[in-house]
Amino acid sequence: MAEPAHPRQPSATARRVAAAATTAALAVGAVACGPKDGTDRGGAGDAPKKGGTLTVLNSEPQNNFDPARLYTSGGGKVPTLVFRTLTTRNRENGAAGAKAVPDLATDTGRPSENATVWTYTLKDGLKFEDGSPITSADIKYGIERSFAAELSGGAPYLRDWLVGGEDYQGPYKDKSEDGLKSIETPDKKTLVFHLKKPEGEFPLLATQTQFAPVPRNKDTGTKYEEHPVSSGPYKVVKNTGDGERILLARNEHWSQSTDKQRHAYPDTIEVTSGLDPAVINQRLSTGAGADAAAVTTDTNLGPAELAQIAGDRELQKRVGTGRFGYTNYLAFNPKVKPFDDPKVRQAISYAINRQSVVNAAGGSSLAEPATTFLPNQKSFGYTPDDPFPAGRTGNPEKAKELLKEAGHESGLTLTLTHSTAKNFATSPEVATAVQESLKKAGITVKLAGLEDNDYKNKIHSLTDEPGLFLAGWGADWPSGGPFLAPIYDGRQIVKDAYNFNHAQLDDKAVNQEIDEINKLTDLDAAARRWGALDKKIGAQALSVPLFHPVYKRLYGKDVKNIVISDWDGVLDISQVSVK
Image 1: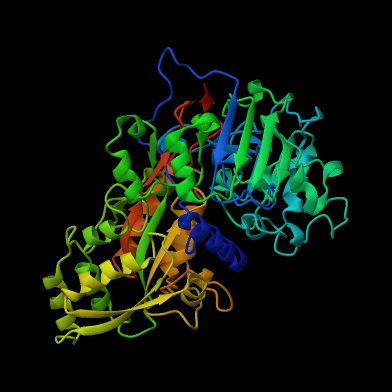
Image 2: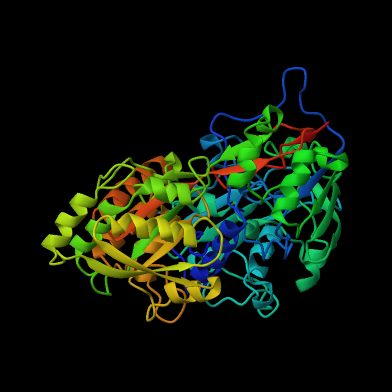
């Protein structure tokens, strides 16, 4: 996510991939969200039934339909219908869906005492689409091929976490019998992972598609995406236009008895991508022909469309609402004057009018004011806090007082860098709202709008990073770790590639606390620690949280059993049925 998206404790490669993934997701609203109170799951007399065809209308093509190359994590998009993994997310609405549960494995993993060794046992009766059994060797091979340079693009954590992962080049170059030695398969049902350091969140990582099994004798390298071998309820019948048109049919060798998370109600699923977002929403609204049984997993409703829907009760019933863990914020570079002065940063924090920023981002239906860096969801460790309380409309008088103490009694002139892309996150509208907020505190803001690629290159360059810019961050899985570590862990400052630690913070106490939390396998306890760390960092005024996005998505009138979780905010197509 341009700034964004994801992570963990990533390497430079991880951060580059994360950035690209998040930016794209935010730009098209691909990261959306899940309803807190549930949506239409069908009445007592309208229970989900098998049969029919589900149509998926998306703006972004499902490129690289290869589990090694996909950047997904336990979500409800198309890949989850074809690729099962060791764990997956709980397929429930809202917060209940932000937990990892067993998928191919019998449990979410058994850690060693220090969480550096994780052991998994596969369920009985697992089969590929051709009826052959799924073994531990297939999962090991699936992971190993994700290290191959020609299959790049997937989540990079395993290269960072597995012993020997940084040097491993994948099975096409490494012809040794043992492959990646840090993954052991003592028998056909057991996998043992050896990590470089404690990682209590390994069960969350095991939801990534890199953990999908791939039979070695069916691997066709870069062409594997054309017909990947299914371990899920559907198999690929046709994939044309690099993911623009995908046809899925039932995998007759998939068994519901081994898969408690997916339901596979429709007989077939037809995916059409590369569509204009306005066209998608119009087709879903009209619901003519096959579009009556259609959904989207990447296209949100905008302010104008929501205004139209507000007057139509029937359409209102077909809007799913949710919240993906994402924060839009104002970033400071303390290496650039006057942002080296904490009082200047605090003054700006007090001056921000979050209500005007929310309005610029589409209004309260599409954005919620933020005062913490962590998203306002329990799984991230969210702890209510406002270190510089100024209400929704800001406190310009308090800001002026701080500026005076900092020696800027006559005011201050600053430059704010932002993207010119219309993505409701780092857009000109949001930048203008910030500009107007600070003006009331005697701060003159000059706007520096850059084309999106130039903007990303500039704000992620350690040598060229501006002093003040708009940014955003989302996580690969719902935890404070992939939120705080990439942004505030000093060991992740990157000098020669994409850098996300905008404040260039290298605090030994912060770094040590990140390590200590990563040792915890009790994720509820870890969440509380992440929340406390967020509060500690927030007091330093290294960023100004602005808002958390809210996503609204329309679905067809014949679609039932809607489930949208807080994990990724995507309408889960593994749950829906059609009339």
